[in-house]
Length: 459
Image (cartoon, rainbow, N blue to C red):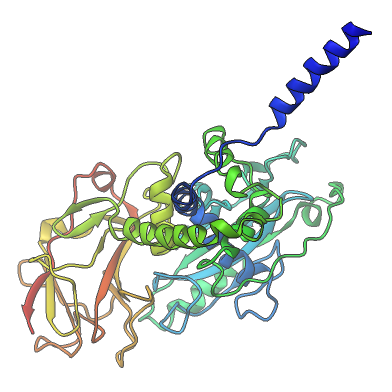
């Protein structure tokens, strides 16, 4: 009996030791951990805007049922508020894939004379796959996008692209020349040949598995500004298969209530920490903004983007692009130098006039085409103007080259004395520009090409 009592006491002591609380975090520790988690996971929650407006909210003008595509036959303009830093070069084909029940098929036609691409983006905004002339070629093909849990066998002739998440953002782009009225019909004709849908629509013998419907939470404009950020995060994380390295990072945030699929209660259950959590979110937002505004190597005032994998283990770069221009292409598909300062390092502003000159032997080297698009510095949206020109590039009609073969472009709020042929109108306030090189040359990817400086030429 005494031996039993002694064993019971020992067992009780062990149990008490195992269930004792960990040392309580200080408010400063909570604030800093919240800020770190906010920066690390920002792309996931920012990406929910795309999922919500493109695949959930039926009242959205961008909505289309999941596992289908919405083809747009208009170029993005200042009227479009859903995607920051959108391009003005291609017609978009957008949609959300739900891979839980079965793979989704992409059937694409031959395209010998027109650039197109389908960018496949995970819930963390990593570009895990491409279908298009630059990656899979210009021949016709059939591709199956599969979930991270798919283990089945695909039909003969179908090429698999495995996704790391159950939901996938599709950003399809079909090139169109905005200033050639006859080119639009040709681009639309190619769009209409794209086929997409659940695999059983193409191969009836393939049986989908049963999956439950999802009650997606409502998205509010303020969700990224308060504790609701982490509620959305917990909901979204359950549908993504994180890498081992990233899972280790995320596990460290469980102490502040971050856990895949779990309700977020840390804020409501810890009133003593609520101010620290709010301060941590604000600090995280400040850090995200700083990252977005200071990405890449700076040469001639241009931020030159990383030429590596998008994004692999570079979580900081991923967060920066999610803030600046979410769903950005990988560099091998399209390269995006950006600039917000002039030759003196001053912020670009429409109160001044500027120019850039590309020497004849240093024109932007792109396999397909290149463009330069202007955006408001604060909203990251295109600049409205009477000319209705939102980008300029090698396809711009009437573009005038100098006698030596060089090219000079002008940026100002009012038309320059040189005329409007080479002019991209600027707003009255601060702005920045993104250059896009579709199919960049090898010397671009090898960091052997840099755009010239933006010169201030007047006020």
